[in-house]
Length: 306
Ligand SMILES: Cc1cc2nc3c(=O)[nH]c(=O)nc-3n(C[C@H](O)[C@H](O)[C@H](O)COP(=O)(O)O)c2cc1C
Image (cartoon, rainbow, N blue to C red; front, side, top):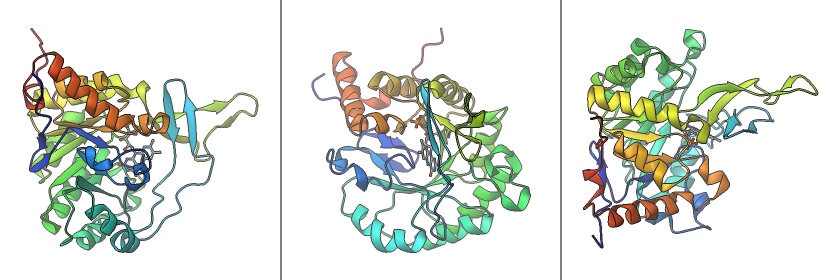
């Protein structure tokens, strides 16, 4: 098979190939332009957008661990108005899918961003980051409670016609319940997984390595957990999944696709090699060609459990 078909879909979102950047790991995507033509990617997921500009958490807020990265960037971003004025017009000129990651501290903040994004060209979908703490409910993350997660997605669904991707936190006992509830509430796709809560300590000072004490763990350390969650959700619900967590190579990405992901997001790998998403897309193509597989869609959820 000389020219396998890399095109795929995430519910209503059509993609020319299955590789996207993961939110927050390549700024607004534009930061990768010096390294390669980002139109080669299936899509870009932007850094979170909140109603107002935010400076994020104090440093240190990135800490390398064995096989992973702890971060507590917080939601540093330029805010909705600057995103619409300065960034979206640049993204609109690039021939790839742009998915805007949306965050907030209250339901109203999410809704403000979603309404502000409405009516703009060049947005293929919204990724709703429901890992954020709900300040009106004592700081518990929206996405760790099925009722709170569904209530938020239902309101967002009513506020926009854009395709909705609910990005779920993995710090839960049963990911399938949360995935099921957000789909019932109107999400088109689930994104699995966000970072796992972690901690690192400096033994000389006995202080936590991050200023916020705990942070989100990403990178190869979390891949088996992410893969297990994609597998569980796909087997139970057969819904469109954007899979990710620790993808460094084409084989990593293929594992997610075989477990049921319709597309994948690449994050921490970009810190090691900014061209990683492009290399992964090319590696997937070579795998399909070598194994005589006509297209990526033939591979989605094809795990052999016999
Ligand atoms: C520095 C950094 C910033 C991140 N910022 C966001 C964010 O703004 N919104 C979000 O939904 N996820 C954010 N994430 C999570 C990633 O999008 C991704 O889900 C997670 O890192 C797992 O994938 P990876 O192991 O490939 O990095 C961030 C991750 C990192 C490392």
